[in-house]
Image (cartoon, rainbow, N blue to C red; front, side):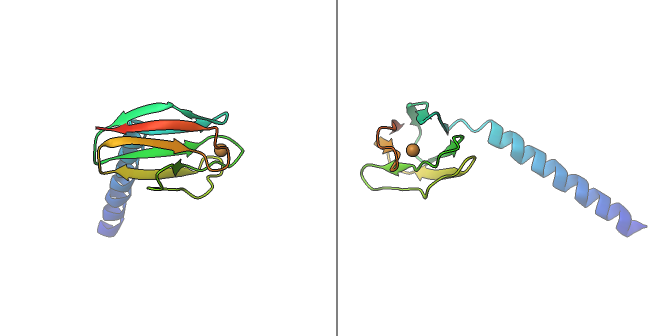
Length: 109
Ligand SMILES: [Cu+2]
């Protein structure tokens, strides 16, 4: 009986923390969407130490590549995400390695 109650409490708190995580993710401000062969937004400003998350919504694979070689994602299939944490202030040019005409700029303050 007691075990049953404990299990229920554990299950409830697990669901609660999953919901919280979902909300936190939805409010993630440093999100870049890849759609229709474009990065959106094409210019994003974040603070040093923050993480940017890219999500590919296209059926075509895309990559997230820094022109200075700081980071390079694997090919992202539809709904795949890639994250990079920007530690140092600067202006970072990003393009898609498969479609180099897809470009954006991340400014880190
Ligand atoms: Cu691409």
